Length: 424
Length: 95
Image (tube, rainbow over all chains, first blue to last red; front, side, top):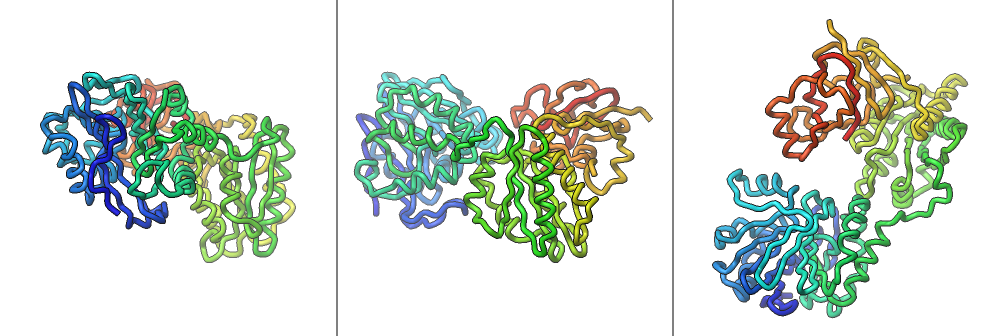
């Protein structure tokens, strides 16, 4: 599969990207059943020519061949980078060498990445933000700052006279079809949804902000950096993003804070502790606490639940010095949702050593959750006193969720005596 | 030795610490929500907000200043792994 030439999107606007039909896995995290495309574009105006994005380094020759069909290097006045990941900037150093007069436009947040990418501090570029424009004479490129879709540096470029949005990774997908346009290629609906779910979903608050900028535009065409160019019903894709960025699950107790207690238990001890944590949390008004045995569930629906929760607690036994695999399986599956700033906690029963609880707490902190309450660790069968500690853990988590924490003052010297954090 | 009170607003705990303590030494111990990666003032992961008491922290080093600028941090931000307590009252939170 090879497009042998640049492909017109409209008068004086061309796709000059490359196809990569053989790719089967992108960036470790995404499967690509029929490859991907690296979309780059060239826009010609009466007083300037712009290149928007480039391609992965291995495909630079194809990109330059396509570009040369529609522009000379000495005509280029602007190079716009909507996103600096290497699959879009692989041909940048050579393009800058061939067109040294072209001014580079990047988002404000892309500046440090550009320096790291090109390993040079002495670079000439113009940082741009929402509303900034570059004139090509009779055509204008207007920038929309859309950070974290899915990197901090992402921006979209709006060719206002043509109603074309060059959207970077936004509205993109990994789907390779030389026919390029959404009304001509094969069925890529799954790829579009799959791409959103793995790339954009953790940043849904930013997606909503970006859509606020994009929705008012009179869109005639969306030209993303991967996958089909959306010229048929482009607004449908914008609407789909709006749907996908809404909470996935309806919460009928939305005035309450939600605490999810997950556990796994070999002899029933950690299960009893989990029940006590849940019971304690339920004593506090304004908290809806729920209990789930990880042995009875699959990871994906739990990830959906966690995305909407305010707090999560994990009960784990310790086996051979580690928390158990179902806990790690869930904790390693949270990269697709936003969990930072949620409340986290761990607890569990153990036979010998009991490191599992601290390891889970560390992992939660690593995921940027707040872990303000030290977990309860119980050697083998919990006593009534220890069960009460579990109930108090639940109450304390609920107090944190509802803003009813008791403020405390402690001395550093006391803190240094304790093995972990302050509360016990 | 002069003491300072550092309040971690997100968890509601105030810790009385000796002058010269770096915030990283306290925040991890107390379980505050500030997270760390390199712990050496390079990555910017531990950027935190000083709610009040900025004047009670030692001045930014050239290194800290550079990292904060690169991360487009505001004037109320510091790196928890670098910021050193001088005395008085300081209130911090993650972010």
